[in-house]
Picture (cartoon, helix red, strand yellow):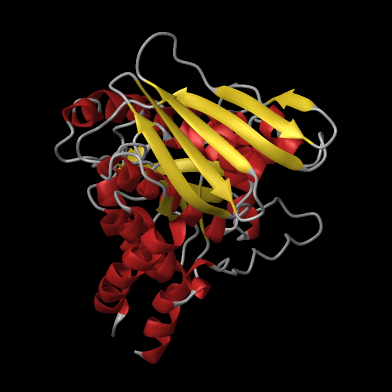
Length: 346
């Protein structure tokens, strides 16, 4: 019990979860095929990721993987998601994917899991058996339906020593990665944008604004201290102030042209971040994660993204005043600790 309290109460909850990669194949033997399972067939990502992994002539980064089974249940009450399940189940079956009737049945057939349910509220429930099984887990956006539940998921991953990775595809655009890798020198500030449609069951930016917020954090890195939000029916502008005085902004759009991108302001020059160019770079990152057992994004950064969005909601609720990331995190950690103890206790 003391171990669980320590995990939930400190930043160790976000530490990368180590895992041992498979031993290399013996000389002259065929490389081991890593079997992948999908949870949730209520999003087009399930189809797109499966097609990339199962492409007969997949590029080298995706070789050695095959999606072999899927559990259809995603959202239970978001009609736009629920209505997709029959069609996407049929598409998966037409690709030769076995459809199973439970997550436990899925885990018997696979080595790694893509949690693709469109509804973040079911991610905690669906991730628990995967984490207990010890299999590496990619969680599609949003990582959870609340900051509290995101903390619980990462706390359980730490407790069970299982690697977990979550990201929007926008993190892996060529422009964002080049800027993160130093193309323009130190990033002194950035403006990012994306569509930000709402889903009433989720915190405002979790549903779709996550794409632009992930873009912002990809180029800025972690370290945001406070958030203030300006909200209208058509758009949001969220301004974050980082600990070193840098400023990053996210614009979420709900009217007019919808696009993804932004601008990064560097020590050497200013550079467009670039927009969405497909899922393949993200799926390549997932493949390397499954292969190595090491998450390519520090869990602390992923958690801070969700704290940023939760703080933006609180700023909206308070009429647009600045909100401390630390304060939002402390409140969520208190709630997460109770749930973590009840789930992970013997």
